[in-house]
Amino acid sequence: LLSSSASGASVVAIDNKIEQAMDLVKNHLMYAVREEVEVLKEQIKELLEKNSQLERENSLLKTLASPEQLEKFQSRLPAEVLCPEEQSPGAAAPAQHSGGSAV
Image (tube, rainbow, N blue to C red; front, side):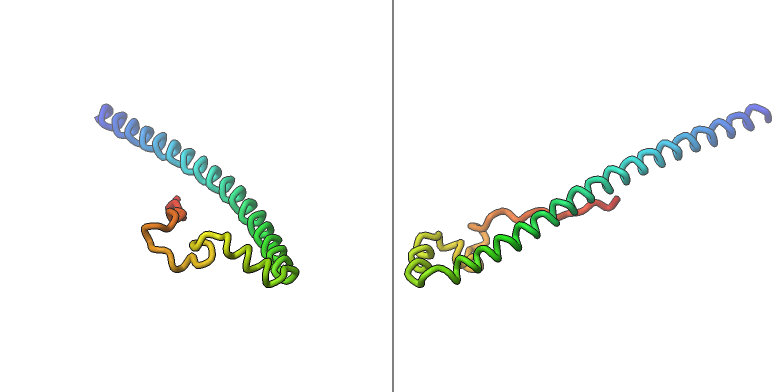
C-alpha cells in the first residue's frame, strides 16, 4: 500500500513539473509574440506615414505637372502599374501571407 501511494505521489510530481514547463513555454511564447507585435505595429505606423507622405507628394506633382508631362510620364509606365485590376491572376505578384498564430 505504501508503494502505490509513493508511486501516485511521483506521478503527481511529474505532472506538476510538466505543467510548470508548459506554463514556462507558454509565457515565453506570449512574451516573444507581444514583442514581435510591438515591432510590427511600429513598422506599420512608419509605413503608413511614408505612404501618406508619398501620396501628398504624388498629388502635388500631379497638380504641378503639365498635361504633356503627365501624358509622357504615363506612356513610360508599364500597363500593370496603370491598370493593376486588369491583370490576370497568374501574372499578379504573389499575395502577401497574413496568416496569424493561434497562440
